[in-house]
Length: 405
Image (cartoon, rainbow, N blue to C red; front, side):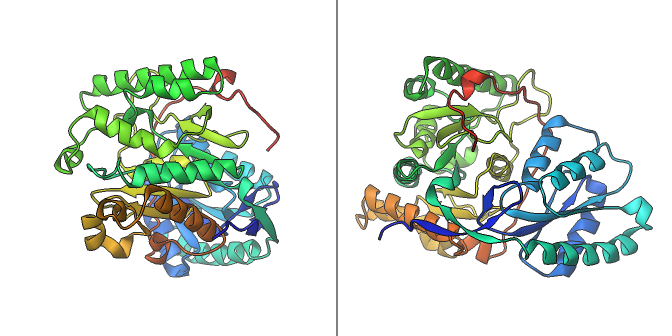
């Protein structure tokens, strides 16, 4: 089966193209979470989705991620729900969304008159936003315009043998077609820094990759707890190095074109490594408190969809961008087939080759990009996590190839 030359997409006013047309309801502090959730619940429409930031004090990283989510190509409009006294700059974020050409509305609970009044106003607002989003023109989108992220979660001893290298095969094929691919995270790639540096397109980029992994190792050492979890051990992984090599195999064999931080969009097609470990001293605890936080960061950097590999089994999806679940362990797949898109564990039973599973993932990417729902979408999974972090902007050495895209 050959990949389609183009597929239908949504053309945004800023020129970007999305594979979904989601309307978001975003709470800007935990105190507004319940009201925002009720608005989404009352709307009873899977294309109206809930996102938010629980913190009360301002944080440049959280603002940046929210901006990138609100103006993501898959998003057609957004309603911000504010309590009224939180630190989030609701006016500033609304102006940025408006500048992108998307419809945006803001409700302030303290000004609207409380929960019931805001709920009524919110239901009317999302109806208006949905109508406006539905007017977005449909255009054809080339595979070369697609951005795909990948993450592994609930890894076990099979992850680095089946699912992860199969994603690497898919990535190589996508990149050969001119697409953009993002893998992460530096905290789970400790020990692989030299190998990745050797694949960098410039020596300066290679040096930055090595520095990013050293930073991650220092960060985790300070915390006293690395990315190797008890669940990984129970699943048969024996060392951090074994886990790192398995995680690394998701990247395939293409040259690494850049090193990005959450919210930075790759400037040109190719393969990019995402550094999710905060800069500076440890301030906010663990870099990502769950896999969902990493998915959000991949989406904030432009991922139209995300490939999620798992050995132990994970049932999550995400708001905004479809998540394709790839199961590494055939026994896990037997138990959780209803939550998985691909059974990469067939390789261990001699039922498929690495190339065949990699091709299956590639073809599924094109089908989901073209409108087919992933399993997590069918089940209604729309998880979203956004917490506090701190990053410095990446320097030019981290993205040596730039374009107007």
